[in-house]
Image 1 (spheres, rainbow, N blue to C red):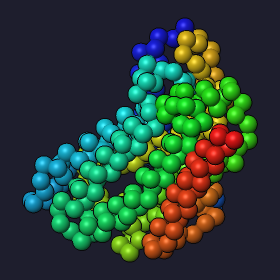
Image 2 (cartoon, one colour):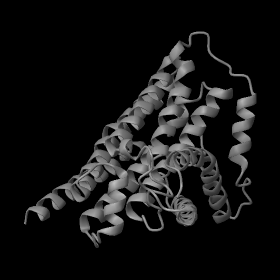
Image 3 (cartoon, rainbow, N blue to C red):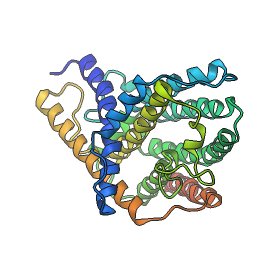
Image 4 (tube, one colour):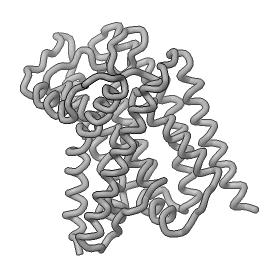
Length: 316
């Protein structure tokens, strides 16, 4: 039997260790699909170490918020990612692994990032912050619709309970769950500034969203922001895998062998998710910024229809 505190601590360290690796895997697969050699899979670790060793250059008119925001963003994203069930459910902090709480943590991280983007007063920072708020105004309601649909199915908003219901109670093939999955994928693409919403590999001032808010950061501050972005990508892939593909996960009180199987299954899910993301981004083009509300509006409508469909079907 594995100690609950030990398993929870291992999960918190696991998400930290795997987040840069997932980013490196996506970049490597995209490069190979484009017939390029690409950087090594471990390159994000080297980039983070290089940034941490560099001196942070801060503008003269920067306030305390500009200095504190990277650490607040990283902390909120790390806590949210550590609460999502990965290799096991029912861990020590599973009572706090609430979907609405995770949405609130991600929203607080976005709040500090948008404020920091406007703190210096540059045009790029204000442009990126305004676009980020526009995306959030549709992405957060869509994510809440996903949470409401899953809560109607499992009678709870706790992720461990939802994974247990999906895995052991044979919910079957439901149209509402398919709609929720599609809505969650659309939100994940927008929240992580991935194609077709944004291109994380470019710095074009006419299209960038995330990069515009962090142009003034350098050194350890930029390392914290980039680490937080990698953690957010890991969070969404873990959320999709844990809710819709919960097979292989260990349960509270299981032995070391069950936890080992759960860890292997989780790593396989992350690898498949990273490869699919890279293939999708290679096969599709980036859309115009003015089309993003339509993109996220479809996610919001899918989440709303899924909630309504499940609610009506339960009443029949």
